[in-house]
Amino acid sequence: MRISRWKAWMIASGFALTVAVPAHAESATGASTVSVYRPITLASLLDMSFGHIVASSSGGNVTLATATGTRVCDGSLHCSGTYGFAKLIVAGTNGTVQVTYDPVFHLTGPGQDMPVTLDFPGGNGALLTLVSNSLEVDFGATVYVNPNQTPGDYSGLISVNVNYQ
Picture 1 (cartoon, rainbow, N blue to C red):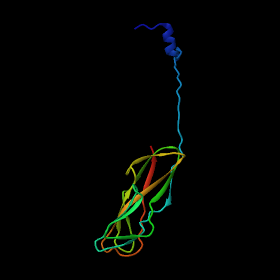
Picture 2 (picture 1 turned 45 degrees about the vertical axis):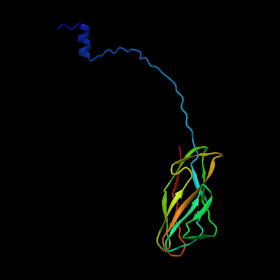
Picture 3 (picture 1 turned 90 degrees about the vertical axis):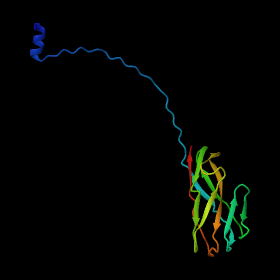
Picture 4 (picture 1 turned 30 degrees about the vertical axis):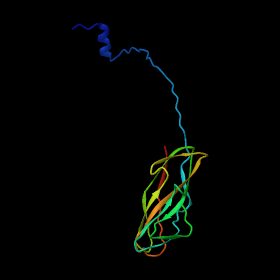
């Protein structure tokens, strides 16, 4: 193989020849947006109350019906006193929110626990719209009073979650 003097000199001296080629680049621009919402707050305005219930030997249900705004007491039970639906206020940024909740909780007290099934218009997972950055929601429920329920005060906690959609 034959090497020219020029190449031999470059190899021997460790000299390298670099040829620069201009690079070709493209550029583009794009838009970016974001909507920042206020954190959702959920506060209790009124606690749920079934009023006073006189138990019976057969037990039964007491319902706070959101559709009618009334309390319905099974014939075997006697209901009296004031009652009230749970009233919550949701605050945040105007838009759609989803309400989810544990559908059953228990009232505990001196006797056997009483199961409570929540009643919410639209059901679990309902989509609601915040207008003027807030919304009031009412929960009703049905409580099952056990046969010969021990007299006393019973209480429980409702678990509700609200998230933006």
